[in-house]
Image (cartoon, rainbow, N blue to C red; front, side, top):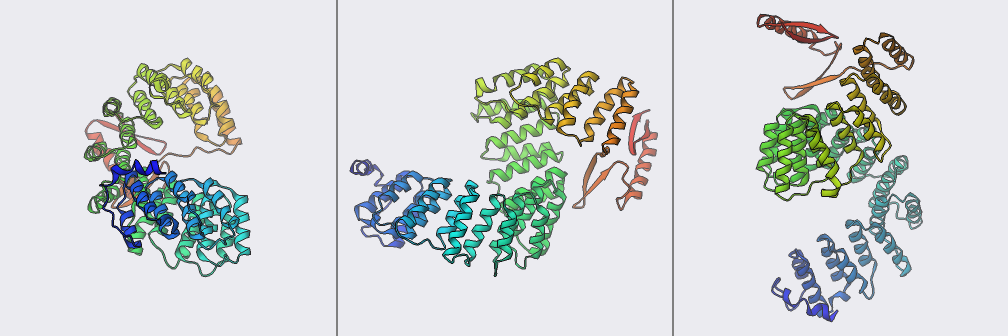
Length: 549
């Protein structure tokens, strides 16, 4: 330790240190620490004055170390404590939870009772957080029993931690029993129960809990909005977001904005996305990289790739996700060359790509037909960039080869890949077979798809189209009969459009929209105008198509 302290002399000018140090001064000193040098200097100052023997001082120091990410130094200081009390042990357990060292936190908890100390209402929430992170249900039940024996189950913070633990371990019904049996419940416990349902994908139950709440905060609204967004129920996420503004009078936080931007991207709700962009600017959130990434994604998926590029260029700092998101946006707009140029620019700026970046790169190669370049990137992902291809990369390559008509090479790649082919792989092969009219390959792909996705009618439709293209009508009839016997129906595709802040969805042969008749009147009116300028309209499967006259 003496050698260590001697090595800290060059830090002496970093922070002004008072001769005597009451607690408020120490807290002020610790709040100004931002580097390991500051922490080490402060620790040396404390040691010279015997302050590590004071558990209160030491606990504040441990918390400062943890906040800055210096877990090992916090453990070093803790291990030298002569007589740790419950307060100090609780602080260290909390620090370990914050630094994702849950196993250490659980082990340290056992020292509380081993030292003859009694865990309190602060000890168990920290321990249960570690248990929840590890998913150790059996240990969680043991801790629950211990809490009951000590009579601490009446504490709302302890019971809320139990709700979180059971939910994270997949036992949301046990969490609900605990929740229902506790009174009075505060808003934190309500939020915990709602988040538990969201975690297991039961968004409807989460909404039921939300509607029963008499008091809601921004976390309440954000939890249910994010739940709908994650469940791909984007229209409901947007509806709840608007309710938050109208009913709750609560400004959205960054999590809510991220969730609703994802929903806007899925629905193409450009007007709301632009409003959120304005909100971000007014509240100075433009430095929040994940939010700006979500804006790029929203603009790209809503059809405004130029605005996506503008957001990208205005960013002072970018992450690999930023580059990848715009790259994927370019690729989805058919701007493969722009996507690849962006990748080269990314390399020039020494930003290391990740595996998702290469999904965008391979997609870009596929969209512009650069088959050889796609092969090169796929073959050099590991040798040049140390990124091992995942099954999604194989799917991109099969799509690329299929679009280029290299069907035998695509089939051979499926056989050689070190993964069991999933529905996406066989689906890509089936789509390639349809594009190039290869009935034999289509049958091979469908046989596997029927095993993996027996209720996906789209696979049967693709193979039926292949048979029809070859005028194999008997096979078409057999396939239709098979679909009927299995109770499969062709689910029509859907389109959505945002008008005056409301998202409207349309499907083929669907007359349920309240403005259905007015829409079709307008379509027929458009047909008349198009006839005059040289286009002849035709109807096909309930969708108005146009052919050049």
